[in-house]
Length: 449
Image 1 (cartoon, rainbow, N blue to C red):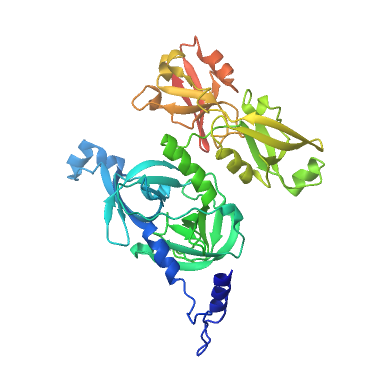
Image 2: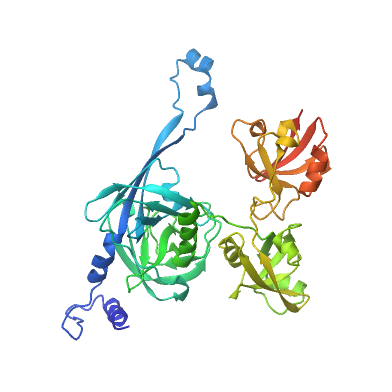
């Protein structure tokens, strides 16, 4: 408290010319001791890799190139990126960073403030939360202790450390400006509950540390809101409690084994609350329940309003997605919901999304290589259309010629299919298949013989 108060006084008198602020020992208050303590745990991450090069299709045609004497186009191009990371386990050499920092990396180099540069291996990453875990083989590492980010309050002091624009170990200070923020389109991350801070975060800060005045890690810096690409005082960090849950699964399994509940939810607006004749406008409104899903077995129905999950209040649909999306397969989830004005409770078990998948090899030779399942919340089209979800397509397979993971088959031979049972009934025994495929915002027919 004393340190925070002195810091507040220091910030309150930036123009006080001859004024000096000292503590009872005659020392001028400074964050330098804290920076010196935590800086060895913050690293610079440099990556290099290759991606498929985009080119004009005409330039890939040998006849076209010969006719116009055009050079052969490279199939791949090299990419490099700079970011930041934080050592969170000194004994095992685990480093936390962002998924988007290392997503295309073939080689990763981690640089410390003492001059050491070490190669790192990817333990695993999770694009849904934009969190990745690296591992390095080194001794004498310093790790940051992890804070309980749920205890953060708007106005708490924060300090961001990272490598913006390649400037090693840059320190910026500020406060928590907001909590539970969402940022549409943030590198594809679906589960979002960001800490907003005005501590300057710029390109290169991604994956760096957001710490409190006790030197504890409260978040992983991940994004900025900016019109120019530079800092305007609005930065975002993944809360440590969310990052820790993801990290634990990655370390244990090499990935996040995210389960499904089988519901599609939306925000409960004041207009919706009035239509449902209830006197509250917080909660997650269930718009669709997948047949035979954990939610269906627990008795949930479209129109129910979930207001609490495992003892935590659910103010909106994003909170519901975060609460379920961070649970492990097999976890029990207790839910409180409102139906027809009455508050009820139920319990469901989070299911393995792959448990209901069916390989199509035995269904029809034209579908060989594809795997299908019931349409559930893994698909952004869930709740918008009815059909079956294409969950996987083997490279080089027959199905790969016309299907992609994430496609939704809405009809077979001009008959609508709203479940795996209906899909199987239409496919089995058919020599020819006419599929209506929904992909992103478009749709098309595919004829398979």
